[in-house]
Length: 80
Image 1 (cartoon, helix red, strand yellow):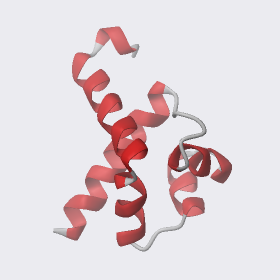
Image 2: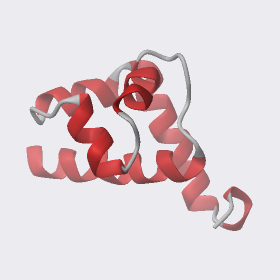
Image 3: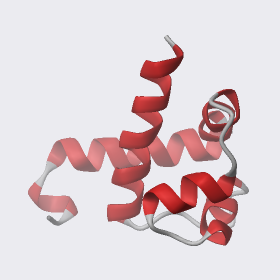
Image 4: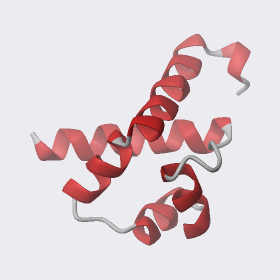
């Protein structure tokens, strides 16, 4: 799937990138009691990638951002 083939995916990716930039993604992760390593493991990426995303040094690739957005949504649902 490419960004242009799924508008809802592009919106989701933009949302998670905004959540990362604002610090909301980190807050959601911490509220769930998860480490960057645990997030990385569940997404199939390196822990340093998650750290780079949360500190704003890098943005996740489309596929990783989409998976991260879904994970954040699940964590927020569990917190409710």
